[in-house]
Length: 235
Ligand SMILES: [Ca+2]
Image 1 (cartoon, rainbow, N blue to C red):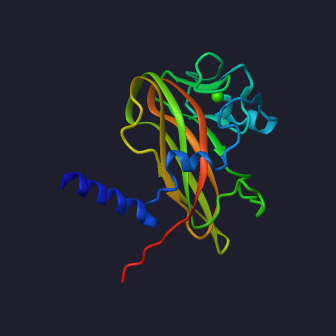
Image 2: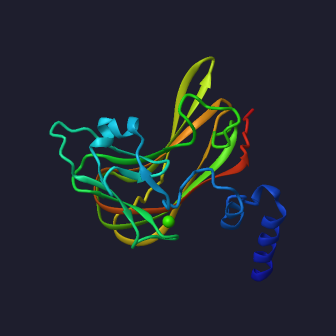
Image 3: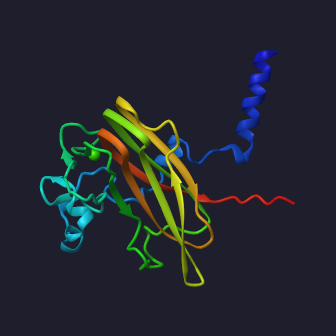
């Protein structure tokens, strides 16, 4: 009886269209990655405008003056402007390909690495990297840690998307869920999903060591469009 009951449950799950999760490993793997250089294989010199930003200059970059293409390093500004955080091209520790990005933080100031889905506030309607309205997205990535010591919110992947309605912009945040990375651990994949509203235009994706010391490596970051969002109305 018990095996029959289990079989029936399995059949029920397989027969319900709503139960077929398009965001499982096989489904998501077939979808294009909307983030550029998620494998951190391409590195280049920062453009002059970005390199001059004070929050960017506050990060030690290895090799000097370079960053993963498409990503912007940023360091919380401090009164003493002491550089105690490093973003490094790592060719020894990587999840796939030849490279990863390594972030070291030696005090409680924030350090971040951010990618915008498209040119901010200048979204071209035809830009395939724009976030589209009323869609369900998944962001996932691989991370490895060494001596990660959170104090507060811990290291996170944070994204936000911007919506524009009647000329006004509004921001919606989504975060990696607990438990967040802690201690020393080997490569693991983490992920979350989010749904855009009807006015969504573009988004930003940020790895951030917030009130946290230690070393984190990131690789194979993906953003995939899982399809139309399903809105449920209650009467
Ligand atoms: Ca890589």
